[in-house]
Image (cartoon, one colour):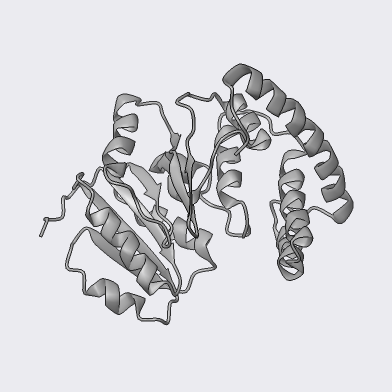
Amino acid sequence: MPEMDPAPLITVITPTHNRRSTVLRAVESVLAQNLTRFEHIVVDDGSTDGTEAALAAIRDPRLIYVGAKWRGANAARNAGIERARAPVVTFLDSDDVYLPNRLERTLAWFEENPTLEVLISSFVSLKGDRSSKCINRGAFLTRNTLERALVAQTIFIAGSAITARREALLAIGGYDSDIARMQDRELLLRFAGRSGAQLSEDIPPYMIARQIIADTIKGRISQAFAGYLANRSSKALGYSLPQLLRGYVGGRRWRRDLYDEFRTKYGARPA
């Protein structure tokens, strides 16, 4: 059994709630990594399915269980960030797994680039029997370019594909606990604005309205309504219905123009 290193090089944070079987699979994929100097913090958001006992049976000091009742997955992620001891923090959703060498390859980027604050990894998406390779082109995006790429959706994003320096995550306030959808994109938009890049007024309402409309079209009326209420109750958002509609129209127009620009410059396709 590996001994706990006093200074882990990277911290993995996994929020979970009543996903006993899948979180065990996620933990196994982390413990199987060839990089051994890590800590894996599993933040349990009030599970009642025996998650705590199942994780307690894993006798590895690198696995750290934090149990409490948080305000959802984002608050749980923030609790993990606060607890993290490593300078680099990465995330793994409890229903995802890491591919071999994920931690070693990720950490190498930060060791080779001292000024790098956030990394968005490529990943494989599995939906039923369908497997899709979500591959981002190897390129460094400036603050303004990152903002534009996020709005135009020309890069692939997943919670388990985000890695950042802990001090940078703390500086931008971590995840927004008031947001239940598209929290990863919102976090990255704040990274884009960390050093003064301006965010277009249409960006947040477009993103929110787009999800609400998508849920409505697919018949998920309760989810669409919940998304609207979450937006209205958020101190950072709080957009009215007219604001969302204006933002959606303006955002679609801007996204189309940005997509044409990125396709010409990078040959990128929307994520």
